[in-house]
Image (tube, rainbow, N blue to C red; front, side):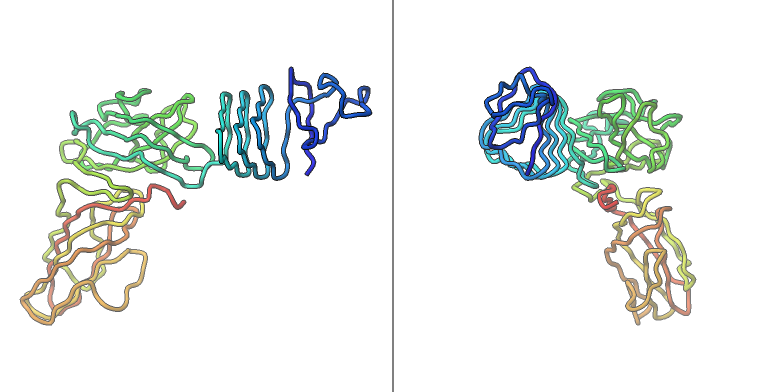
Amino acid sequence: MTNTIVAQPAAVSLLTTDYFLTWQGSQSPSTRKTPVSALTAYYARLAGTNTFTARQTISSGGIGVTGNSTVTGSLTVTSGETITGNVSITGGGLNVTGGASTVPLRGYISGLTLSNDGVSPNSVLDVSAGFCTNSTNTTSISLGAFTKSTAGTWAAGSGANGMGNGLGIGASTWYHVFAIINGGSADIYFDNNPNAPNAPAGTTAFRRIGSFITDVSGHISPFFQIGDEFYLATEFTTVNSATFSSTPTLFSVISPAGLNCIARMRVQSGNSASAWTSTLYFPSVTVTGAPLLSSTIFPQVAACSASIMTNTSSQVTGVHTASALGSLVITSTGWVDTRGAFL
């Protein structure tokens, strides 16, 4: 490994056995006892695997690590640090008082759990503290606990309004919740499109962290979230049909609009005139094999729980095979949303 120190700091402490030093041509020394003031040292760029066994302090310039570094003492950086390899700290600590640039983990999200506000649940959304990588996997977004209201156009800060540009709150409508960087600060806003076209001016990074649906009065429907699982506090019967047939038919369920998510539901089907089978499935696949529900006895109904991927219009496909029309009831209980973690 060869490490080079270039440019001139105010002061620098070196272990000469660990570094190859580059001097100005007119000041090339003949021994390693030449004062540091004769060096054109400015910062150390470590291009291999490096081990720090004592405290290292860099008070100007920066340290660029393109391999792996192990810190067994303390590393203090008061300017900037760029890490494209790995840093392992086994004692002491890494203290950065300037800027630290690291490569964000692709698709990462932790915390940022959504819930109805305890005081104003109809119009205010609570977001727990958390951290995520933005939609392009280039920027990290870190937030403390936050609240945002549906009462008006977005304004910066917790407790302010959160609607995107040109948007108002509507009835029976899906809204997507975004963590953003705006004006250099982390914040939250709401959009009716999962691709964030109505982000507030000045937004430089965003990540969708969840979605909610409003009721017929334009209130945030009560729900709760556990990880990627979203549960409706009040379930919706979205399908109640007496004309279920052998023609593949799209049925609407509760699942975030504009996205492929897994809809959680309870399903009941039956036929009063003949033996039957019923199947629900993701609209983009061809179904073969065993049905979801069936009966050779009539009149007879059967029920089960089901988890089915939706199309981007919050729909699943259903087919009922019998010589007579059947019935279908779907009660939506929630959905599974990975919030971009695998994109």
